[in-house]
Length: 300
Image (cartoon, rainbow, N blue to C red; front, side, top):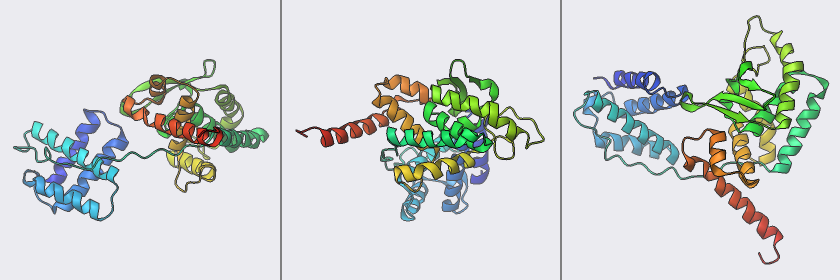
């Protein structure tokens, strides 16, 4: 079978049977198409371990990060395991494929004081009732106040919100639904936006939408717009050129743990499938505590 045809069949399997998120399916397809280019148009059944090793070696030579190599190795193993199950190949060439471990880097996190100043400034900017200012304030408060992903924010519908209980129902990775809490500042920002900001944005569109967060033309907001907002306001605070909405998720998780939250509870709030994913924030908190100790303790 042609490798490209098999890639599309596998992508359909990921989407329809395993029900992976569109972003994950897109990443797997991209990785396998890169393998197609490296393999030079050979058939699926002719791919062997040496072909796979050469593929990863080329990626290393062009400077791909270790996390990218690890992901591509995982994509190949999943793909060939599926192909073996489908009896498209006689043996799995990826069984002995070894990729470098990801190498964990600590996430970018803003300080509590910096977040307080940032959110206070946006609350004041929204006081005049401008729809975009009200929306932007609500976006920042909700991302920081709940720790949800940008895709989960963009997917929120009006019926997903319960302002009386200060909770939101979100659809996370793998189409897993969960209910996340948020604080009083986020609730107040959402209430102000829904009453005074969203109607003005709805009036700019000719079609009805149940989306909570709207773009400047009245349609459901896209991740790119949220990314640009967060990058613009957060980059100067954390001192990083490339920072997006996930930095607010990192910040929320770290501040929860700094405040004494249980690791399992933070895992549930963030929607992590594995506790190991959440544990990286304990390292961030430990580093912050150590830095504070060294600055403040006379015996440090």
